[in-house]
Image 1 (cartoon, rainbow, N blue to C red):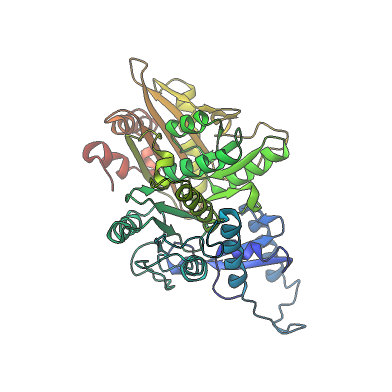
Image 2: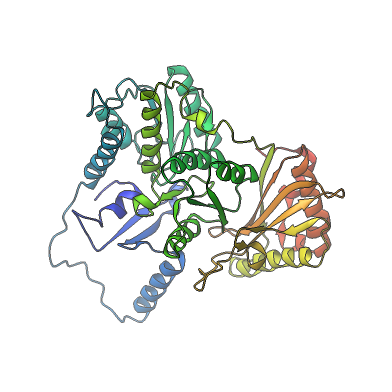
Length: 462
């Protein structure tokens, strides 16, 4: 198949191609030396436990020579250019749903759209989707693939990626800027006024679009989203289900809710991963952008020049947010046990009342105190990483914000996310976390807490 995006690898399992399975090699936005494999069947992506089972069985068979490894094929391999078909699929969706009254086949005529592919695989969206629909894409950035990523990390959470895209939008007076990650399963956008839209803002934007079409639907996000986002969703007639961090967890929760009869059309993680029920629950950054573009054109046809940013003007701005990392001080083989020990100690300290004003959080029918948002149905999903979220109040019982602590799946460290609606709230919560938990419990002996030490003294870690 050659160079392709992650969503395209799944889409080729559907008609007219209808292959049985596909395997993709990618490092995503990570350094080129960290390539891995993604496995797809017609049911979707394989989960981490499923991939581990495959690798364990393959390693066992190889070690015991229970199977012969042959490079001989019954028939020669055939190269299929599915990216062309995938791009046409996206173009057709835009044409059909915009249904432009004057130029049906070029509904983006008169719009300037900047694409920043970050030297990943997203350049196709410029020349094979936007250009062919009549858009002006002059000013687009870093379209040619280069796994060394010479300009910036291809990541919609990356400040440089968003800043460069914002500058290009403003310089060219563009209507929209798009930032893709390497394999185009994530995205962020910039509106016509140069406002970056990622994280909670991107989820709010997609929620506003989806709730126009499916009033009353449930929207699943990871537990790092803000209380302001919950208010934004509920004010528009939606329901907000906070769930475990990890885009597969979030998407799988949406699938399960639909099976249980709870209409759930959107699942998104703050990282930019997102899926829609209408798109096979596929984690597809390009499809998300297609939805945003369609709404942008519809607004213009309706006589509005405000741009897509106006859809989230009611989203309350978050005052403070920070992510800190604590590396595990251990041999790699003991790292998982060590970080589990630390996270479970965090839970115990809160339950025992040793962190005054801290309370394990609950979100809807998903309880953080049961392992951070464990399913309440009869077939709960396996826990891939331990995590907890706590609401924090001061001595006057005034809400400061929340703290979310979790194991990293890919690296031997613990991530600590905080949000606060109070000036200096994150620094205050960090000091309490350091003094009343990490130092008091002795967890500083198995964790590198240098970032936690530094943040209360110097503030912004960026």
